[in-house]
Each structure stands twice: as C-alpha cells, then as structure tokens.
Length: 383
Image 1 (cartoon, rainbow, N blue to C red):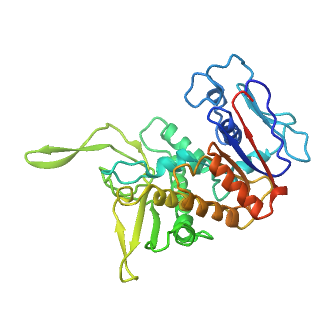
Image 2: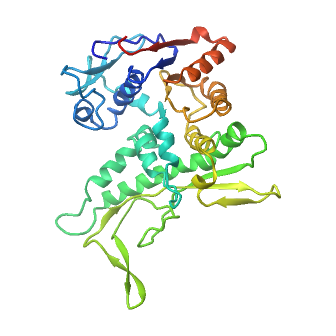
Image 3: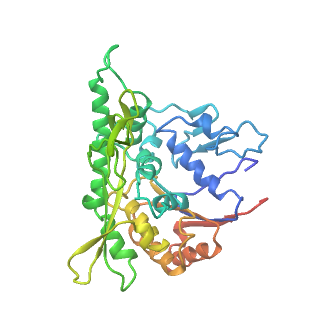
C-alpha cells in the first residue's frame, strides 16, 4: 500500500479476495504484527526493508510506514512503526494485550510446517508451537505469554553470583514454561471442550476412513542424546554425540558446560484396526497419509485450542490462504466446521487469492442469510 489505506470493518466479519501482490496478506500480517507487539518488541525488524521478517516492501522509498487500529466507541489509536508501539492516549492496560491472547492466526505456512518432514523424520511440532501458538497463549495466571518465558530462558542462563550454580529463579522459569506448555498439550489431547481427536473424527474424517487418535507428547525424558521418536521438555544439560571406542558406542560430551537444550513435541497418530476396538500407532504419518488428511490433523490440533465457550469483544480468527492445498470436498468440511463451531464465538477475517474459495465462502454466507454480518470484497493490483 504505497498510500494510506483504511479498512473499516464496522464490527463485521471480513471475506477478502486478493490477487498475488495486491496486499491482502499485508493486512493479515499488519494485524499479526500489531498484536504481537504486546508480546515482544520487533518493530525495528518489522519496519526494516532489509530484514527477512519485514512487513514493509523492500522497494519502498517511504520511511514512515505504520499500522494503526481503532476500536468502536473509542478515539484511542494504537499503532506500530519504526519507532515502536504507541498509544495516542496512554492506557493503564492496553486492550491489545488481552486481545493478542484471544485471537488466532492460521495461514498456509502454519499447515506446511506441521507436516513438511522428510520420510525419515519424526514430526516435531515445537517449532510450530513457539512460532504460531505460544506467542498468542497467556499463562494460566495471565501474567505473560508462554513464549515470553521461553525467550527469557534461552536468552541467558542465570547463575548465583560468580559461581557455576544455577539460580533458583531460573530453574523456576524453566519449570513454569514446561508446566504451561504441558497444560496446553493436555488441552489438545484430552481436556479441551473438543479435543483434536474429536474434531477430526466428527468433522474432517472421510466416510469409510478409519477413526484416528491424535495426541501430542511432551515428556521429561533424560536421554543424553535425544532420540528421534521421543519428546523432551526444555531443560539444562550437556550436549553429547555417539562415538565408537574399541568397538563400543559411547556418549561423548560436545560442550564444556551446561546448555539450554531445545524442547521436542512429538505428534502421535493411532489408527483404528479392523476389530473396531484396538488402535495401532502410525509411526510416520507424513509417509502414510495424503496432504488433505495431514491438513485436517493440523487444523484439528489448532482448533482444539479455540475458546468456544466464552465470546469476547474484538476476538477474531484470521485465515490467510490456509485451504489452497485441499480439493473442494475437503474445503467444504473445513468451511462447514468454521461456520458451525467458530463463527458463533469469533469474528472471521478470511483472506484468499483463490477465486473459487472466495466464491465458496460467499455462497455459504448467502445460504445462511448472513450478508448483513459480513464485509466482502477484493483488492487488486494497482487498485
């Protein structure tokens, strides 16, 4: 957007079609960046034309790019720019902080990162969690986003005085991160209003396909060398590698001191067998399931964390081209789920470059007689 662009939603849902390069994803990422400013200050990155995470076109010659938002019933402007986050009237507690913990962003990159593993690999979802889920998830005491605990833990190991003993508060920090992440995993597996397993089997499973059990593993394993099929908590330890000595394999230290060892969240998928009672583990889902089923599994995991109990002002689910890999029958299953289960509790902001998907959503809006609740339209190149 080389000039100022204003989008007035009037409290409605948004369905936006946009050609590649027209700016529809810029709106998605503008919202994403603005809300994430409550979690970490990345404005110097977002508004740098040379940084890979920049939301500013690298060919721009305008130095004053910014994103602003206003809420109905208020004159306060919340904005981000090269100089950082700003409020036109300073607030005791910014509503954006609360909103960041209630809104959800899903795009095709999220889905790709869930199952883009080589056939020889086990699926580790921690990179997906730390990028797309934990930055939008507050701790149970509402004090911080879970990703903030992680960022603080990996920034520097805190020690007592000048000695090598680890500070107790640092140990508490790691324990709190693990406990909060374990709580989120528990919601997905068994404690949510609708678990990932329930969502998949009730909404996305094809007729005639076997039922699946979907679960994530996040356990306090203590192996010196992490095994590729096990999950691990965030932890302190030494790095090792296997070395053959006199015909035996021994674990040899690679580091001289303790380090922060990365977590691993493994995906476990079990398939119902012919006896309709027992389930058998699918060792590597990416080798046995097609892309549509893998996409459905990924969405089931993410949708399990939606708060479908209490609606909140301003809360939205933003979707950017997340269904482009699905055929029409599988798209309709997701659209049906979104309209039945998500729309009553969230505003929907849907962005797509697929004209057919845009039309499919619009037909559903018309069929449900929801035209007054939606703002529908397109942005185009040179518009």
